[in-house]
Amino acid sequence: MGFKVAVVGATGNVGREMLDILAERAFPADEVVALASRRSIGVEASCGDKTLKVKALDHFDFSDTDICLMSAGSAVSKEWSPKIAAQGAVVIDNSSCWRMDADVPLIVPEVNADAVAGFRKKGIIANPNCSTAQLVVALKPLHDHAKIKRVVVATYQSVSGAGKEAMDELFSQTKAVFQIDDVAAKQFPKRIAFNVIPHGGDFMEDGYTTEEWKMVVETKKILDPKIKLTATCVRVPVFIGHSEAVTIEFENPITAEEAQDILRNAPGCLVIDKRKPGGYVTPHEAAGEDATYISRIRTDPTVDNGLVLWCVSDNLRKGAALNAVQIAEVLINRKLIEAKRKAA
Image (cartoon, rainbow, N blue to C red):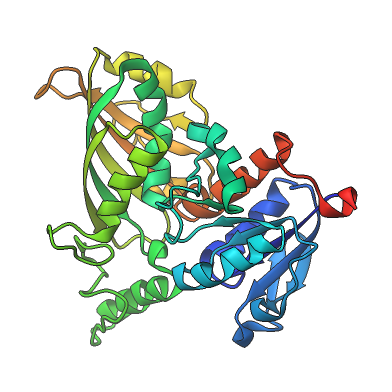
C-alpha cells in the first residue's frame, strides 16, 4: 500500500502547485486529499489527471494520514500543525511559523537532508522562505569547497510570493496603466506595475524587513551559523520566479571557473553562463522548472577570494511546493516513515 497525503491550503498558489508536483513526480500515494477552509468546500483542484473536491480542514480526521503538506499561512499552521502531528501525520509546513523552532528541522534536501531525522521531536518539518531555498542550493557546494565567510544578496522577488491577490494586483495595475485608468495599490504599499518596491514583509527596528531577516537566520540554520549575510529584498513586476544577485566572500581561494565546474555538478543546480547577450537565465525561463539556475559567475575584485553570481528559480516550485514534496520523498526513501495502512 502507498501513502496517504493531505494538502492543506489546496486552493492557493502553492497548494495547487503541490498537487501538480505530487502527480508529476509519481509520488507513491494511494490517496491525496485536498483541504482548505470551509468556504472552499467543494471547490475542484486537479492532481494530475484526477479532480479532487476540496474538503474542510477543521472537519478532517488525520488518523490514517501519513504526510500533511501544509501551505495555509502561519496562523493556521500554528493552530493545526501540532494537532495534525499528534494524530501521527508528519507535517511539512511551508509557512514561517516553525522555521526557527529548535525542535523543528528546516530542510532543503540538496543541502541538509540528514537533518530531516529530527522531525520526530514535534512531528513537523519546516520549509524555508522561497528566497532562502534557492540561495542555499547555490551556496552549499561552494561552501563545501572554499568555506563561505560573508554573503551580500539583493533579491528581485516576483509577486506570486505574496499570493494570488498580489498576482491579480499586478495584472489589474498593468491593465490600468495601458488604459490610462487609476492605479489602485492594495496588496503592496506602492504601485507594483512598471515599478520596483524595496520592501518585503514588515519593517523591524534595525531598518531591515522580516523578509530580509528570514534569509539571514534561515541560511545560518540550514547551512552554517558562522556565515555572515546581509540582504535587501525587492519586489519586482514579475509574476513567477525569484532572482538574486549574490556576492560571496570565501575563506579560501576559488576561481570563477572552479565555481562553474562545482555548480555544474551540484544537485539541484543548472549553470547557464555563456557570457554573451542572452547567455543567462531570467525568471521567465525558470518559471515551471525545478532547477536553481545560476549565471553571471565572475570574480569580485574588491575582496580577497570573492565571487559574484546571478541565481534564479521558480519560487512556487523550488521555493515552496517542490521542496516540500522533496522532503516527503526523503522521509520515504530513507525509510523514516511507513504507510499506516501497510503497518496496520
